[in-house]
Length: 123
Image (cartoon, rainbow, N blue to C red; front, side, top):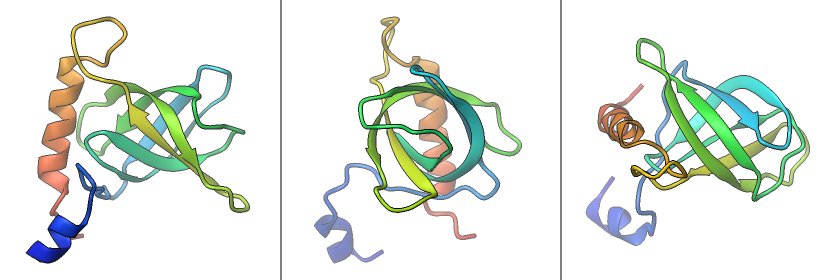
């Protein structure tokens, strides 16, 4: 990625793929499944959903990366594709901190480490 392209992209974090990774999700309004991870960033994840979901739904996730510990994280759905099936959802993670409403600081460290390992990895 050249400098011009890097600074023209307004994302705060960049998405990356992890071969063989999966997401196990549980929707607070009902429904759960284990599906392949499409891509992720330090702040969000995109995956195929097998349930009727809408932006604003709260989701509990386990990000499963081969050879690593599961990463437990919570967030809310911020977008769902409007095209015909399969549908894809993007979940933005809740903030990280010590309050019980937040994702743990340990989770934040795990996500930063995953980003450092996979962001520029060429598969």
